[in-house]
Image 1 (cartoon, helix red, strand yellow):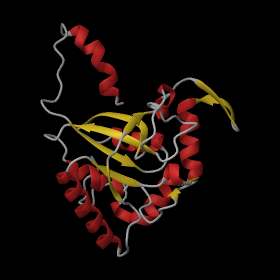
Image 2 (tube, one colour; image 1 turned 180 degrees about the vertical axis):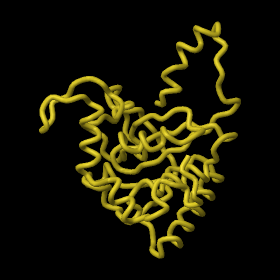
Image 3 (cartoon, one colour; image 1 turned 45 degrees about the horizontal axis):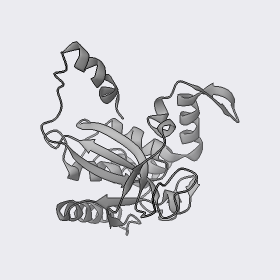
Length: 213
């Protein structure tokens, strides 16, 4: 969830419940390892109105952090297509992960952390397939990011949402520190940003066309 989304209830009260929202919102679902990290990367894209950490790709009822066999940590991204296209989101997402690693992402290994793009319509599939093909051509190698049909998305537990912004105290190997700092040290310790830059070079954290936001 973005800061904009968090501010909406207060804005609604201030404006007498006349809330300004996109006339039409679409959703995208991406798996790129730790959903805390994917959520943060997507939140900072102009046109994204909401992000939700969760579990995608499985069929069993009531997946949870402790038990989500068949599911992958994923993020549902709500966006305003008048501001940002699905194509741009897919291209940006690919350049925020290690697209060469199909066994997990960075320091998180196993089926829960494998990358994927979950399409919800034939149009999304066509766009995602093209973006993956273009990315493979740019890197000169086959990508380990499957384009998969969406089956089910289950929202993760409340404490996972906006984890990177949390201000509560958590006990870590660094001692008792704020959640946002614990997240940053986790991300740095995993070498996520360094690896993305190693894979993508100047295209890292862009849409591959020079746009960063």
